[in-house]
Image (cartoon, rainbow, N blue to C red; front, side):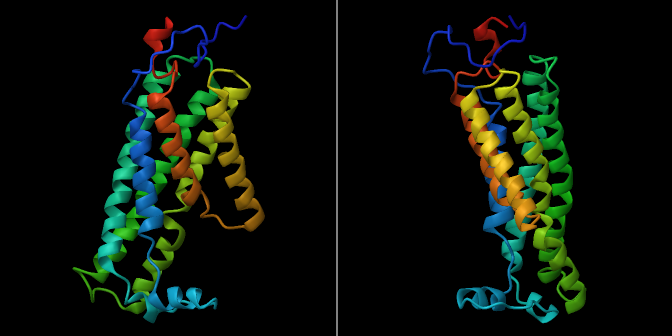
Length: 240
């Protein structure tokens, strides 16, 4: 018999009123990340029009001047919110989960992935904010070529850093299927999105795919932990 406490205790009485707040930091981080990364993605009008016509378009420095600085600023602020929420969620995970599953290496990998992504996203969203600044309040500080450099940094700058969450998702899947410490439903979702995203990156060669899929995984995981019958969220109710 394993001495490791399990997340879902079948013998525990069902209580639909159970709710815990700390996993909602994951929901906030994922939702803000989707806004800061996908919803406010800056693309030149010429490129968008070409895509709508089913044509290709080579972006040149002259295209960048027409980008909307307001969208860039919203993306920057939403991204900062995602970074801060990731940090808080990582800290809460370490407090509530790593102290419960003290012998689980995978539990620590989850928080390391979160922190790695948060650190890299500071740069990704920072470049988005800098571009918005040089298109707006400080317009004229750089020429088209200078703005084009910032545009290229933002192209995948807010997408690639979410790669750290692939490690977090795979670690959560390991906790579910190998260590048997987490709901296998939650672990299956983590495995599908983690393996699927990593596989898509390897096959397609597109490094920014994690920025589309992993924030969504974070939202799903946060909601599950907040409202589900999870020992990591309610340790005192399971005799911990």
